[in-house]
Length: 149
Image (tube, rainbow, N blue to C red; front, side, top):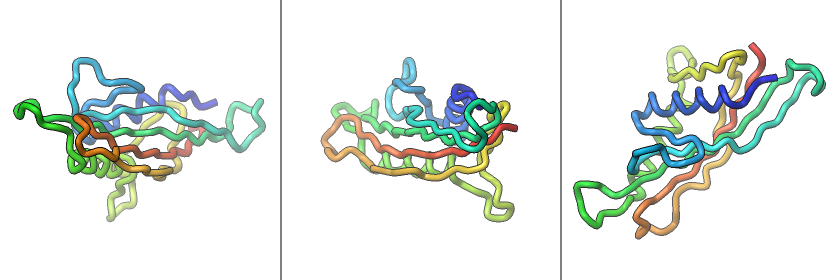
């Protein structure tokens, strides 16, 4: 059986290292002001061998929420849609980007005991609707398919 927690940790590390932004797993990163990412485990589904067999494949969906925020150097500033969209673009590249020459992922997702065999954008509802919000967010959900290594 592929454990979920190592996938979450690996994805969090990939997103943080490739974007240079803090990533909170299910909550705001400690001692951080926006901008940052929030990472949520959403769904999981097994397939392949019978459930009693410990070698089934796993499909998991994670939500990445890009959180834009005010500029600390400008009083009364707000988060802006442009920043949230740029962060979403960076997250999409980090997770789905491939080297055009080799076809390999730009950022490998290394999960102990498993091999990532697929990555897709599951859904992208987009940004918050009120540009007057002090903090704006942009939501994306990514699906990862894994098989035991």
